[in-house]
Image (cartoon, rainbow, N blue to C red; front, side, top):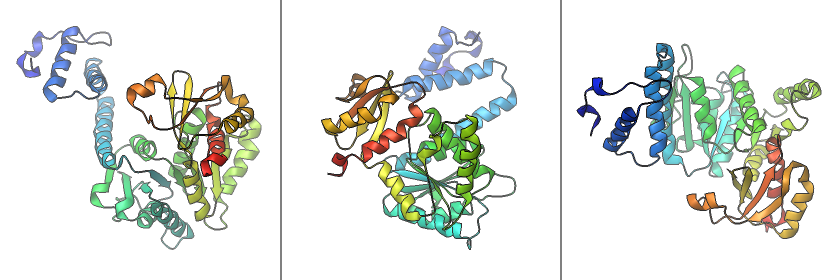
Length: 357
């Protein structure tokens, strides 16, 4: 039965945070009519939540926020889907940086260097550093996620028209600027740039995002990020609000060559990770030797909750999903609060002699 074949008045209403069996069946019929079969349960949850928002007497403004966020996320997902197989790096920086500024040239240069290595460059599609990065990468290797603001920031005309999307909300824009990329370069900027940089660090520290390389790039001889490092070392670490090594995951440099090498090096041997229950599986490009695994266990024993770092075949959940079955793997059980230290283990894996053979 299709949705429009039953009078609305004959359908029991939703109560107490869940839908009636009749409404659930109607949603199932709607998905059938729409031909939704892949990831059907996730789509059902989205539709069900929308109906529940309507029956919860949700405030109109809250509904507008929800509807707009879903609309623009769908548009952004459609933009990124054709480039799913390409490695992407996001470049952050001020919209107010002028073309004559050394930082503008630095953004252009690092984007060009990364594009030459096959990276697609993602920016906020605005002027300043974003414009410079788009110019450096070129229109065919750039994606822009713009923001609608009252008085500034039209999308960069450097970006090819199909490769840009405009968002209403900063939170959905940041989601798209971060979720798709395997590396990040932050150049000096104001509140917006610092917000993006600190959110990156928070996601890494808390394990809410997979480990990625983060570079804070300054102009040659610049001191912007060095000042941030001093603030962290003089205030945040001594007060105990962050751990002493939390900022070590970041490379601070004024060298385009070092910035590019840092992004590339992070993915030299490390490929990806997956949680299977409380076990962490690290997928590598080259299998380490037994002696190298023994060395990792000695160096990183304090990170483990139990057991050892061990070689493994794909776990059952990975086999079920056919998830990168061809890659060699290591499996371990992390101790609490150690997820933020994964970058150290990944760096060590990338530096193993077997990885360079």
